[in-house]
Length: 74
Image (tube, one colour):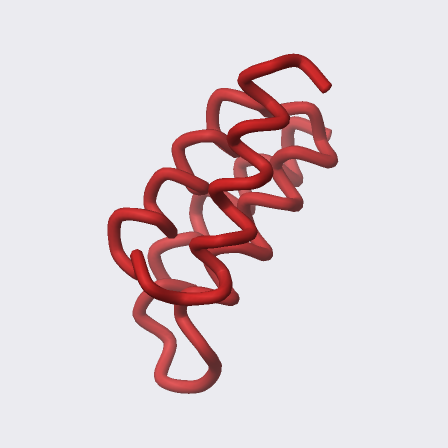
């Protein structure tokens, strides 16, 4: 599991700089993966990044909802 996490950390900058795909969605997908792996501090940071970088996107709405649930423990 740690190897997967290290690979994800190594690939994350490449995902952000990738030419194809929607950057906000890619960032949200990574946050959701981190949440599934129970790496909640990193998931929260990524959700914050989605909100900060893409504040008016549908992905930011999803990130706000997930952060609210994570912060209330639900």
